[in-house]
Image (cartoon, rainbow, N blue to C red; front, top):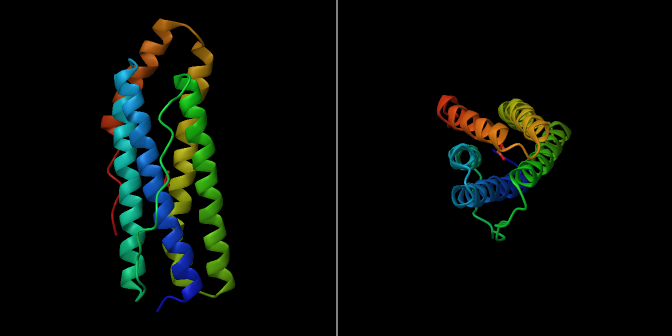
Length: 171
Ligand code: OFO
């Protein structure tokens, strides 16, 4: 049985994963109308993945005898000054999420809830991969600067990543 503290922080994480999904959906929509079809596909896909992260925690909380909740959501940003600005915001957001996952892990260890600690291992590895991927994309965007041909190729590459990424497993 999950304790109240762990249940509460996991419910806040469910809220954050839902926000991540809505943020990437909003970003995908911006890319779609601003001439970045590849980045748009990549972000629509990413939004789906975040929803799977949300579901994964919902199932975990309920399976451990807790009650998963859907807490209020803020409106995500919908305007970005450039593709670089957008990916910089993704990186900041993912680092924020990583910080929270680490905090929950710390609390789970403190409360000797090793089952939750074990559950969070998947998220810790996922955050590492996500941050690495976003940093990599951002480096490429910075490298091409204002070069339109370079940007065209990055957008194409993002379309390829969107179709090649394996599905995130759902608990
Ligand atoms: Fe971006 O991995 Fe969930 O939030």
